[in-house]
Every structure is written in structure tokens, then in C-alpha cells.
Amino acid sequence: MAKHDKSPVGISTILNPVPVVMVSSAGKDPGTRPNIMTVAWAGTVNSEPPMVSVSIRKSRYSHKLISETGEFVINLVSKSLCKPCDYCGVRSGADEDKFAKCGLTPVKAEGLEYAYAIKEAPVSISCKVKSVTELGSHDMFIGEIVAVTADSYLLDDKGRLCLDNAKLVAYNHGEYFLLGEKLGFFGYSVASADVLKKRMGNK
Ligand SMILES: Cc1cc2nc3c(=O)[nH]c(=O)nc-3n(C[C@H](O)[C@H](O)[C@H](O)COP(=O)(O)O)c2cc1C
Image (cartoon, rainbow, N blue to C red):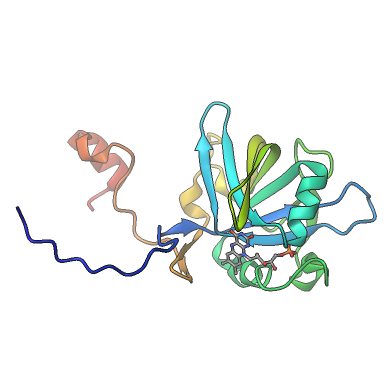
């Protein structure tokens, strides 16, 4: 058996890279200003129906808003939104209007009654809360996706979503990275030479 040459580095939330997203929400009272928070503990958890999770500490202002309405929007983060994304993760909507501070525009979220999406985000995913699980530090909201909207520049002439044009940002061990080189695609390890050439060119 090969010698084990890894060192223990401490037990922590080291699963990386993860998506980093801007979660927008609002209160039931139309006078409540819509809010944005940054979330890295987000994930896809089911396909049919499509469902996602976001884990949010009780202390976040967004926790209060999402609990009140049962709605939230996951906005994907493109390169141009990276700085606002970080900002929304270090300031609270309890103290200020982060849409205004970041020069972002709230637009009514497709399929939801209260929540707002971020107009400047390339893709916005409208979610209705299905369950909340208290895990310890964070409460995990499971949301069913009820609508997805994408910027028109991301659609090809056949209306297909080309997400690789969105210049999306990933989060790796406390740092933001722009997604880079395409290495393959689902099933490329067993794809025919023709398909490989079509999808990957000469790479
Ligand atoms: C990169 C990044 C990732 C974060 N991920 C989470 C997260 O997954 N869950 C969470 O509760 N807070 C997370 N935070 C912290 C919140 O975004 C931050 O406390 C924010 O100010 C909460 O805003 P709010 O009070 O307006 O809701 C993250 C912050 C950053 C910068």
C-alpha cells in the first residue's frame, strides 16, 4: 500500500471552491427597503423539483426578511459584481441600503410576491422557502426554484443559455476568482472524437 503523505490541517469548512452569490430579499411591508447579503454556503440540493440551499446565521438582517416572507433570490456574481458582492458581505442591511450604496437596481423578482432581484446580475434565481433546518451556527433554508431569469446577452440565437459568457466568480478559501480555462464538459471523458472537437475545438 502507498505511504500516506498528507498532513492534518485542522477540521474546518474546507470544501472548495464554492459558489459565492448575492442573496436578495425584502420585507412584507412595501416600506421595507430590499436587501442583499453575500452567501458562500449555498448549493444545489435537488433536481426535480429544482431546489437550492442557503445557510444563513440568525444574526443576519436577511435571515429576518427571508423568514418573514418565505422568499429569496440567488443572484449569480459576474466579474463586475465582485466588489459589490464583497461589500454586501461586510455591511448589514439593518444599517444601510446596500442596493443604493453599491449602485445596484432592485427589480421585482419573477414568480415571487415580495423579494427583489438585482438587475445587474447575469442570472437571478427566484426561490420559495420549503424548510428551515437549524444546524448550529447557521440555519439552512431549502428553497424551491420557481423562476430563473437571465440577461439577454447570455442567450444564443436559439435561446439557449450560454453561462460561460457570464464571467462568473467562484470563492476559494477566502478569495474570489474569475472562472477561467474550460477543461472539459459533462461526459467528455467518454465522448467521441467528433463531439470533443465540436465542443472543445483543438484543446
Ligand atoms: C464571501 C462571503 C461569504 C459569506 N457567506 C455567508 C454565508 O454563507 N452565510 C452567512 O450567514 N453569512 C455569510 N457572509 C456574511 C454576510 O454576508 C454578512 O454578515 C452580511 O453583512 C449580512 O448582511 P445582512 O445583515 O444585510 O443580511 C459572507 C460574507 C462574505 C464576504
